[in-house]
Length: 407
Image (cartoon, rainbow, N blue to C red; front, side, top):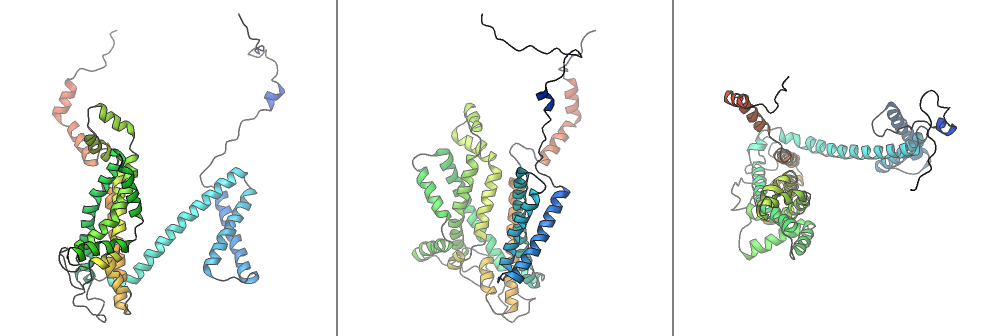
């Protein structure tokens, strides 16, 4: 039998000798905590901002022949990052400095995006509030309003109704087609899946004016239909469908394959698996895909200009005569040299942003709940059923699963 020569084990207890020198020199590891904000971070960022601002002003105003606000801000940001890195090296190790420098870059990028969005919203609001604060802007059309009419006459009711009708028809056409194409590419497959995916990817980068020209040439010129909101909705469908298809395909592919296998194991067909398992699981992502497509279509101007025409009269029928929309309303009135018309155009832009915000909130409310989670109404109904007397009596009459032990 083979034996292993092992070193003798030191005896435990007070009789054991002193620890070796190598063991005595071992110290506990110092953990590095990543994340969080401390006073050192705040003072370091403030010092880097102040120092880089002073150095940048000195270079721009006294040393270098540079000028311009954009260049000043870019140089200030570059000097700020360099100063923050230098101050960080005086306090922390290389790993901590790199981690916090990346955090500062990410935070600054997020603040920049929020600032740009706030600046756009504030600019449009300040320009269009003169017209939007009057109720007639939402209850009247421009049928009896001229260029020099007061701001309390006329409005964008026809454009609001036209945009909602055209977007609703385009969504009705694009969403079923887009989701069906996504299901075909991700669930069915086959030889035609690759050509369909290539075509959808090519349509994603299709210029909007080309979609308008396509519908104008096929629907209006070839088949003889007049310019209307329905023709505009067809052009918007061409723009929305590839967006919905690509986003829906990505979401459907994220559904775990084990859910499909469980459905097949229970005897479900492919159609029932897709309808009852895959699509409900991917519902939040599908709602996001729909919102992305609607956001793409609601702001398009060139396809609507070619297919819907323009009118100052109110037209609530999208299948007959010209119909104006909010993007076309903005394009027509902002370029005019009259302050009242420009204010109405910016007020329409503010209305368009509110419409998009409502669409996003609605999509989040409808698709934000994860699959399998109960709604508040369902939870209240279950609690109400549990508190009923007959339910409580039935529960009390059942034998207990755990019997007390006999002594």
